[in-house]
Image (cartoon, rainbow, N blue to C red; front, side, top):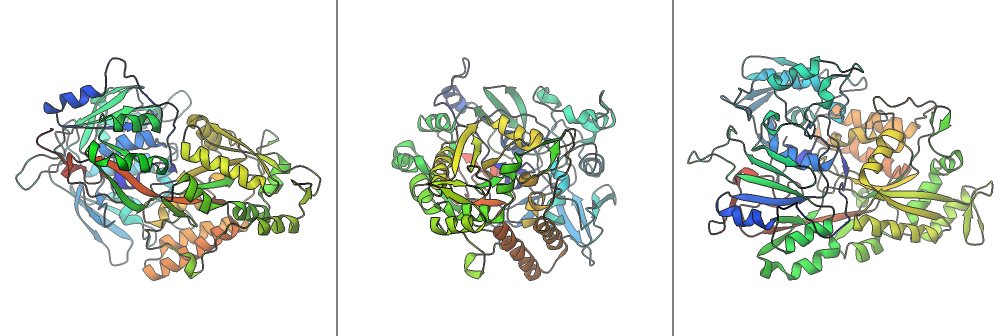
Amino acid sequence: MGLWQKSWIKRIQNWLVIAIATLGLAGCDPSQFRTQAAQVPRLVVTSTSDPKTFNYITSDEASSGEILALMYEGLLTTNGVTGELEPGLAESWEISPDQKRITYKLREGLKWSDGEPMTVDDVLFTYNEIVFNEKIPTSVADIFRVGEQGLFPKVTKIDEQRVEFASPEPFAPLLRFAGGAFLPKHALEKSVQSLDDQGNPQFLSTWGTDVEPKKLIASGPYRLKSYQPGERAILERNPYYWRRDAQDNPQPYIEQFIFQFVASDDAALAQFRAGRIDMEGITPDYFPLVKREEQRGDFRIYNGGPALSSQYISFNLNQGRRDGQPLVDPIKSGWFNNLAFRQAVAHALDRSTMINNIYKGLGVPQHSAIYIQSPYYFPPEKGLPTYEYDSAKAKALLLGAGFTYSGDKLTDAAGNPVRFTLITNAGNKIREAMGTQIKQDLGKIGIQVDFQPIAFNTLVGKMSDSLDWEAILLGFSGAGVEPDGGRNIWSPAGRLHMFNQLPSPGQPPIEGRQVSDWETEMGRLYVKGGQELDDQKRKAIYAEAQVLAQQYVPLIFLVNPLSLSAVRNRIQGVEYSALGGALWNIHDLKLAADQS
């Protein structure tokens, strides 16, 4: 499926950082982009952080993902409105009667953005030599592990146009996952085979942000024209892209796509309101202001309903040690691993006030990692446990678990005051406001929270490398409506099992890591859900998983915001949805003739 809808990426969200309100482009005012539009039809958008890499296999953050989504297309794509699979680089596909084998047929005459032929051999190379290569750590690999043993499917060449993915057992998500993007063998084979001084494939450092644009080979509608750190990335139409309209005109119609890097959402919004960029996600705090400007600014705010994203807080449940030192203070670890403590915190959070005050009513309470739009979502009215705001119940749970009160301060059975640090990505106003309320809400039940917004890169380092954190406020996004996309969150061995994380490749080992029975069962249910092809039975399996997650609350879900985006009226053909956003059909979008 297309990277715009599914993103292999990581899947930690709402990814981006906020800090200032204006941007200098080192002599390149964004208004120049608009005045040049008569010569080159272009769209200008913002991103609040520079990419770390242009290698989508090793990328785990959103700024790269936004760019790579326009540069790579999969064997299949996803309709951003219906969620249905559609042909992409593969013109068709067949599923064997035993449901174990999928054969994709590539279109004839496909070419990479450098003009080289795109072949079945590229697909084999991507999966057999990169994704399934144990020396190349990537979260992409997690979603391809099949069954209890976590075996990879076998990818084989049938002929010059057909490639087969053979699963060791029926695996329902394979059609979508195997239909994803792949990479050019002719450009990357040497980097996979060559090792650096540490014995790692040079591929791991290939296609970094210092890559020459002409050496970055793409398969999607755009390719990289230029990249200036801290300023902008310019994508140009891929002249070898396969899509053409009914009149045989090349697509996409818009020739350039510009990502302007700004330091904050405030700065991005300021650029949009000044007419310098073409579309902008609208946060609830700014919705009333921007809504009043729709007519004057010649744009429309699209509302796609609940977004495919989650907001949650989580405690570090990892009881392991590094070099003899515990990752988490043992006293605090005892609190965090106490189920009643987590449930009490879940009851102490006033989600209704968050929605009304922070989200301005533009959100709904969230109770599951599976999105409301998914057919596999199990709603509260059918039995999904929820944690309604109830500070009295929260206190009762704590007292029942052996905690006591010294005045209005909560202490544990040993007399230790209950106090921990909550981190989030600095500059995100919504999260900073949520963190402030969480601090206040938990203060009402005697818990002292030290709320510390920190730089996004520092936060990622704590989560993936040092594992040195106590509690975190963050979110996930990008998994789409297929629940197996969240398996690497819920599997104890998953690279996004952040509340009890294994060490990343190359990081020091962890001694004494413990996996709870409920974690093991969650992992088993996600494996079982992938094995089951009967849709009703799949729904029952994922319903059980959602109930279990809510019972043990490793992630305390908060608010599901609405998907809101302001888009200039000069952009024609927008079919906005929470699933696909405004750009899922980028190849069909046009700019109004009098402005392009």
